[in-house]
Length: 362
Image 1 (cartoon, rainbow, N blue to C red):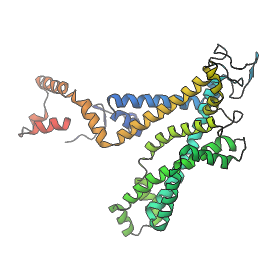
Image 2: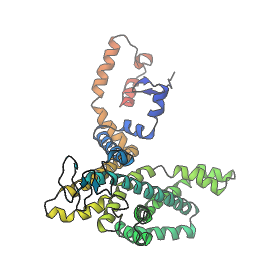
Image 3: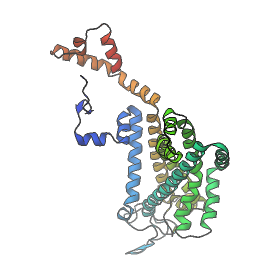
Image 4: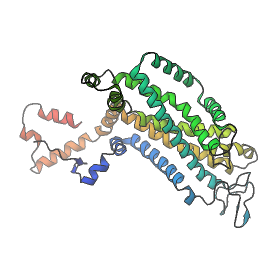
């Protein structure tokens, strides 16, 4: 009789363990092996650190992002790293450490606004286009292909100019940068969702829903959409890193966020270009390092999850990792039999049963 009790590493799982072990990210982490697991853990650690810095920026940063003076007076321009300013100060007199920490909050806000907005718009357009088809589908595909043909940074610059209108307010800062990046990502989600919708709408369960009289709206949002968005979390992690780079590019070229609106790493790098030639390294090192680390964390996480989502890659890597454990498992099985424990072969001594069990274990 088969035991259906959930287990964790061969032991019966407690109710609380069953809950968190069933989380998608935890399941993916347990399925990873070897170098792939190391890459996934490293990416998750970097992303978690980035999120913590962004959320608790007011508590972690020693000063605000636009503070130019403290209890002892003005900070001074291009001050070297010291106890008062561990990362030094910029040419304008801002504390570099504070702007790096506050820049993580700006980057997180832009990622959330840009990527979530593009997911919503791209998914809705892809669903309608793929399900209805016809002339509407051809027009939407033509428009998104035209947008996708533009270089992403150039398109973001044009949209930022159109949205901000030369303003330096919050709308012309964080929101204009986020919405300009949103336009860049909409075609990607549109193409992913549309291709899945075209495939799913031809499945038997969709035809069955039509036969029993379900409305097109119910079929689209209940049956088709649910089975067409499984790959979006993977695209989200990869687009998040691209959003960071696009935001930094906008700021570096002077089309991003002004320093009095929010801290932004690309803008700080732009102002630190002249410092590099004068031997002042601290104004450019830390913002650049922050961009590299967060993009690396998001990329490692996205690539690892993408590999784990492919059953062929997952099974192949698990087989390689488990090949070295076969000999130890066989020795343990023989030792258990010597101690008097019953084996599956003893219960069913049919020819070839042992080979089948061994193959299943592999």
